[in-house]
Image 1: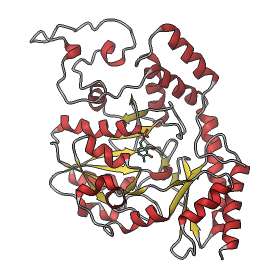
Image 2 (image 1 turned 180 degrees about the vertical axis):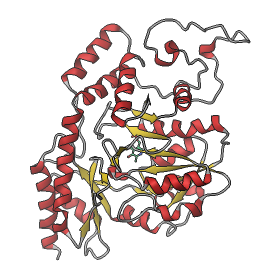
Image 3 (image 1 turned 90 degrees about the vertical axis):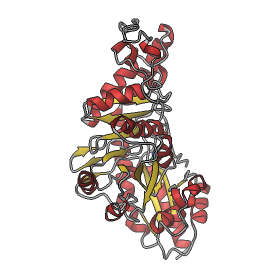
Image 4 (image 1 turned 120 degrees about the vertical axis):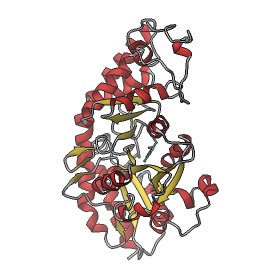
Length: 399
Ligand SMILES: Cc1ncc(COP(=O)(O)O)c(C=O)c1O
């Protein structure tokens, strides 16, 4: 049996929209992107969604918007030490300095008890990543942020469909960044979305994704009407407002073909979500069979884990290494991914920040001892059974 890590759903409706876009000749950001934004905002229960070209760009832009609100290059952003490298990269791409805080070994998320010690006069924001779809401790994080006047951005790349105390991921901070990459529940092949209730922030984000462009008329921003910009030469200096850039921007737009694929996923989102939930629910319910050598995350009564993937972590006493376990899974057709790295101490790209091995013991532990496998919509309970029984059989040989 094969248990691939990811999949991508390209529906008939997506194919129809792709053909329609190709026939219309309108392939860059247009009405399908706009529709995706409106429907994604609805899914998260927020007023605005801004589509961009990746989850990494979504996070970068959400942070870069702070330059419009008094932040200066080199100001600090608190991020969890354990995440996909994009979480740290985005802080640097937004011209800020990442300040890493260790995570908890049980939740995989930033340790709220350690955040406050990392706050300085230059701190501007906290990135709360919901790793493996498990919501970060948002009440604690928002409370710390409020006390220090900080902006909270959710890294919700992996948190499609997650709920925290009844509220959807994407609505839990001031802004949230989703990835629409292939392995995610709503996928546009490549893509990202920023969600927010802050209208002014949404306006800044729409400018940032288009190189920092000045004009915010519907024609320039949404490119939906296909009409020329009505304000083109109406600035005081007589510049062409379409080529006037009041802020440092990025080139991060989503195109119509990507949006067509994303809308197709939204058309069948309930089915995708239900299948993923059933898969992860089954795997979590069976995991106690694998104790004490392996553990995973727990779903608490106040939350719903966004069904992104199943983490598998070796406990301290496990008498085998991660490579051996991954090999056994792969030999049995189960594709594996590691559980990322401690960005500051295991990811060489961040070495210039000067952290030392041992600074983030929990993130480093998970970076050495964690794996994750797929729970996506093209898998079913029998695939999850196969994963669990492969692990159980492996453990029988390694008591
Ligand atoms: C936690 C996290 N943040 C950010 C990203 C970046 O998303 P993308 O690959 O769409 O740029 C990912 C990718 O999956 C992720 O897992």
